[in-house]
Image 1: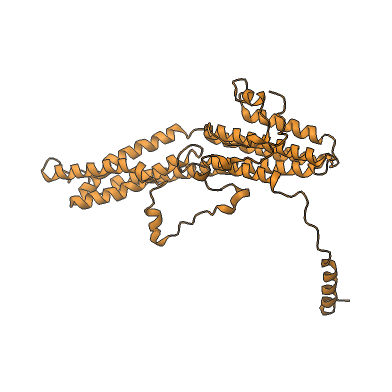
Image 2 (image 1 turned 90 degrees about the vertical axis):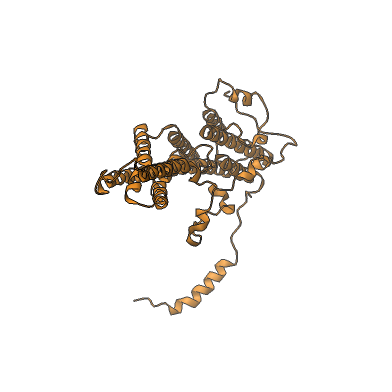
Length: 373
């Protein structure tokens, strides 16, 4: 397992990337280097009707059971009150008695939603750092390798080997974050061999660590004696370590659960609200229809906030609102494949006529400039 997987050789240099993966069409480009096809939606429709009527990724369905229970309780209490089985006049004189409970619950719900929102964005930020820093490391290594005395064919093999290893490492990280077995990667950039079976076997506990060791070995072997100075080369290791830090922080978000006592407190108070608010509405609203309407409107906000917090507190998963990790892997692979097949190693030269033009402009502008003596 300590040997480097060899690069692909011979006629199998055909670029085969994640575009052939069957799930490609289910994701939209959202990773930064491939952001041209992704535009963040602005929820600014007329009166918000497009957002209100949207069912996909909404929390209507998950909040519906609690709302149905509250409305049913309100309806039952009003029916019992009409036939004289329940007397609510002597329950309490003023709604302030119940408002204290709803104020505290509202504050706790906003606090929980804020914590869940921060966890969701932390997961997104660490994922972006992981992908961005690893991609930057690969770009630097390929740029430095341009100045090696190796033949163009050897540099191409190094490109394939390095991009294949970075794709493998990123795929292993996405697999660990998403718990998804089917994660595409640039398998065709590396030769088949026993190394892949060993990587998938029980002897290797962490595929990301094994791929990290392989990349360290490959980069060190390639640049141990290089025309570019060592302090410049060391920048690759710094960027690579920053990407690993992003991965470990993302794992921290995934494996650290939301504090159970807080979640238990919210669940209990929401349950109490679900059963008690209909009684308050039945006392202060005479008409049964309006009592049911106000119960639905008043309690749905709390129930939906609770569901929003539950959805966002774990950004890595298979829910519709979770981060599309397989999509990030596909975009990462497209960018790596472009480094091999579409990115030029020769920067464009300067315009030779521009210095003469600058001199002419300076000669015209100098008489108009006042300089104190």
